[in-house]
Length: 430
Image 1: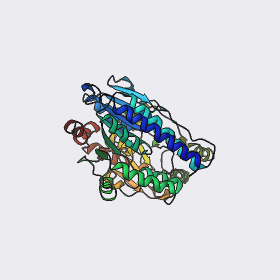
Image 2 (image 1 turned 90 degrees about the horizontal axis):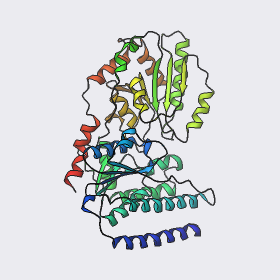
Image 3 (image 1 turned 30 degrees about the horizontal axis):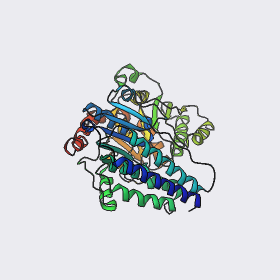
């Protein structure tokens, strides 16, 4: 490791020791702090719907909530208007563009750790800190130290593994990825309670990380969205109207949108060959590092029967679009194979049929040919689009059949599922 990086580590360690000694002399805080929860994510709050749902559910059950994270995107208006929820912004730090890459990365991690530690010490003392992972480096270790000092309980909500996300960029054998794996498993064991999103992740946490999840129903990934009445009106019966296809993404390496673009090229050929299919309006929402790359590819495509747009929607507008759409497409491929795409959950909440790309535990959410379709490549997706949209928008179409099945299925709403799986931890383990 470079000498400057070592000096930074030593300085950060000394500063941390001083802060710990000072804080241990402070009183624990007022009795009224009991029940306060800090919901934290070292990421964009506006693009962290599950953590926003947690904050709203906690506030609804009488807890004061500090919602902590980046404010790159505006959170939902329900968050902004809730008097029990106090938003604390953390600055999103950029990597230094000087020195070796390892030095740049270490410098950023140290700076983030110091900033996060300082910010968490300034907020009202929480009884619990509910932390999203990933990203967990350095947030898990920092949050654990804060909990140690402030006598709070650490709860980790495992969405995925951070080291598997990093491996998409650096490769599994990269030293940074291996260090991140060791770190995540070590500090993950120091949490007081844990939630996760799939049974597969629950088993993996237990077997490979020796981490036990506290929820008897780890699949608390239920949607807060509902179907709009617009589909029951005349718009569904309008002949010759285009079909609205929706996909959402973070534009990252775990979603290959070239699959969708190739399938759309095949779909265009089907229509040009005389197959009676509707025109498509394809809306791909989201922000992320690969958006410019895919926009350049889209700009080079010249369709007669397909329009593609890639807007960013505010939190209030996204469920309206889902509730108005005809078909959803999910290209999320879990880096670990153990998490579930929230976008599919929200689509199902709107009774929106979904085509989703295959990965290891997707079967826990999407049942092929029951509540959706699973594809493995662009050819399968193109065939599914053709099959679903034949006879669109009539009630005889396969798409309408899937929608009818989703309406008939009795799915727990987010509130009901959260009260069963999450609330007992805050009620019975204070």
